[in-house]
Image 1 (cartoon, one colour):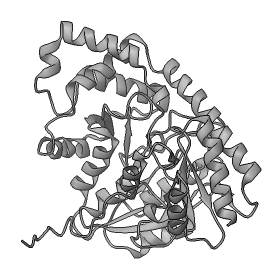
Image 2 (tube, one colour):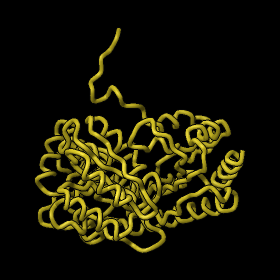
Image 3 (tube, rainbow, N blue to C red):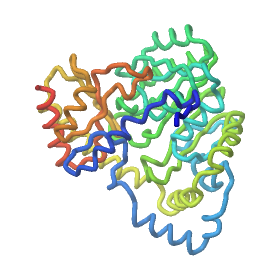
Length: 392
């Protein structure tokens, strides 16, 4: 039988990262391809104790339907942290709990975009967001990412020449896939351009708590005085990715539409894990736990960079992130898709840069490396193997 698929999905491709995961059943493969937090970062015993308490004292609440907006104590805790940690707290803002940051991205596009509308994003950008935007048949326009953020001349040109630009999607802090952080000057400039051309900004900040070097830079949302920035984040990288607890903060008029859209999506995010996250904050707080994660990633990133400094050809360029999970390698005149195939044949998995291009099928000389999941021994061995492959 021949199946006819909707226009929304017929041109979508499987995530290259998820496809790479299928090849990792071989325990001898060293994976630099994941986007996962380290298993060492999970507070297992603390979560176990909280889970037992919830099921002992509040099982009905944990197992029953709940409100779409999210568990009220957790929403208050998020709002308090946004205000205290990120200076986000305008009266017109509301917050909704989402099923991971991914759902926050998807619902934003769902409530703001019609088919053919334009979304401007960094090039390269997060594949999960790109696929969400593609599912609504939007026009994706990528803007070259420089060492300190998007090229502002090209961003303004994109705003000028494209019709119905609904929002600019940006990951300004420890960007996925590049690890680049947008400078304060460029954050202000992007916000000014959004105002000049009367469009919105979706600021995705899942890694912002994971700074282990350099100076803090204010979020774009903290500089927003008009309700122009929608802020998306999650607990995936600071508590547990499998909990699938994220959140959106934005102008109440936008969030109220997101609530309606979520009601026909999944009704509400897993209430047990919302309660678990809330009790974790109540009992233990987040700061001490996050500090331990930052120390772990600082060590792993430093080890990977030191190995690359020692073993990579000097013509090979790579970013030096100050936080997050990723760094970005760019080679002279080498197709990263081909290199990724050779690498996996040599028991090392990387993600080629073409995966993160807004325009599907575009070639790339770059690839993404993750340092949060491999062991120290795997980092040393894997970088050694990559260095030899790139010499060949």
